Structures are given as structure tokens and as C-alpha cells.
Length: 101
Image 1 (cartoon, helix red, strand yellow):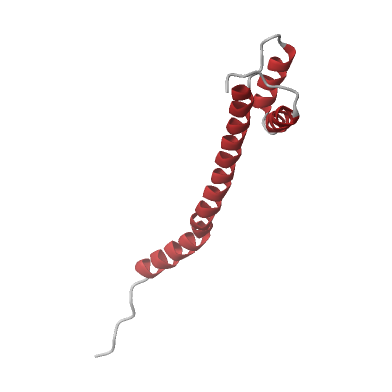
Image 2 (spheres, one colour; image 1 turned 90 degrees about the vertical axis):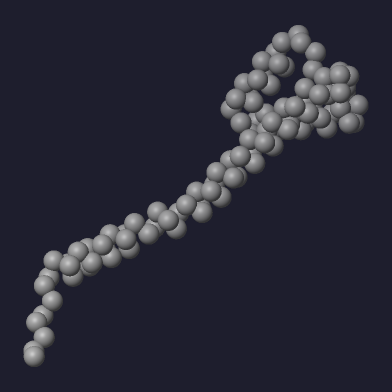
């Protein structure tokens, strides 16, 4: 994990995965770009961390989308709630008809 990221086939795939992962989020893009522009060594663990962080960000975004979809039916009820409330208030404010004895 502490070994430097190499240019062999496995290392090449890690470079590609890390670059692809970094391109999917602006913050990761900035981090990866600074890392590439620096003289700091890039280890396998660093590339894995970047890739796993990108995956976690994507999972969080997916969860947020799913969460919003779950909340939408509740928000869509607002119109029906308002109509029901108005109908209820209209019935309450209108006195009932007197029944004939």
C-alpha cells in the first residue's frame, strides 16, 4: 500500500482509475491536479484513497437523489392537504341545516 504507483499494467490501471475518479468531483479534481503537479510521491494507497473517496461521494449523491424521491410524495401532498383543509373549514363554518321535527 505504501509502494509507489508504478507504470506496470496494474499501476497503469490505478493511474487511470484515479484520474477518472478525480474527474467526477470538482474537489477531487483539484486535489489530484495539485498532486500531479507536485513532486510528492504517489503511492498505491493514495490512488486507492482517491478512488474510494470518489466512490463514497457518488454513493452519497445517489443516496441524496433517492432520499429526495422518497420525500417527493410527501411534498406532493401539499395541494391535497390544502384542498381538504379548505373543504373542512367550509363545512365547519357553514351551520348544519335544521332537521324538521
